[in-house]
Length: 261
Ligand code: F6R
Image (tube, rainbow, N blue to C red; front, side):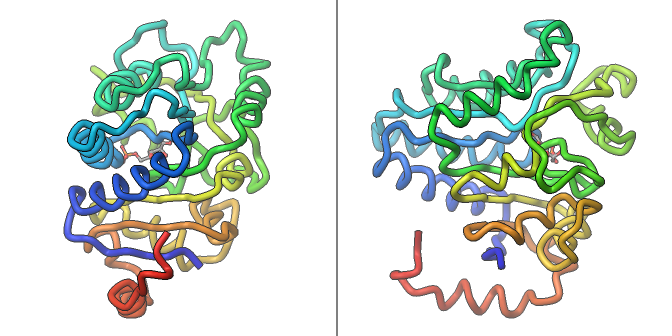
């Protein structure tokens, strides 16, 4: 089962994520990070940027792979995930831009973009720590309900719900692309450590389904139950529909040092 950690707020979650990534980079200076976009990981990226600067951590060798990208946005569009990853991750953390990849959403090369991305992840030796958000539909990456649990990077059609949820980043809902290229659930499960973050009551149902529901393609987040090392960090609101809440709190409060990773 995933380890579930209930925190006060996004900053507290960010501190835990930054701790995990800093210790990873200290033991492996060319660590491979799996990078989510959207609002959820922003506090973690801020906390990590702060730690890197404060402790003068050398991150020039750190590599990164984004989870997903919209298909068909013009190059340089500010809401393309390439642009978001540059703005929110590469620049504030001081990563080497050439070492951070985002799936290529150019329609001209989309037929081969998934296989190319898989090959690049393999060549990097796989992802060490994958940061995940979760959508209200239960998606991880952009694997909407019905996505194969064995899927690899490929094109998907976004649900209307997800397009509406992401309309806040665009001038109008119609501008949100209908298609995306996303790491598959199979791709995500190959990462060595999954860290799923969720905040706010709008995510409570998806979190409960992911952590405690049946493992099913209808709830893509539930695939984390198949992973031997998954950590779920949520605030009280996102945790509110979990049944085993008391146990998660008890396990975390009594976690011995030798169990820490
Ligand atoms: C983003 C991604 C998505 C988001 C999810 C939640 O790269 O893969 O799964 O994590 O849509 O989005 P936010 O964080 O904006 O609520």
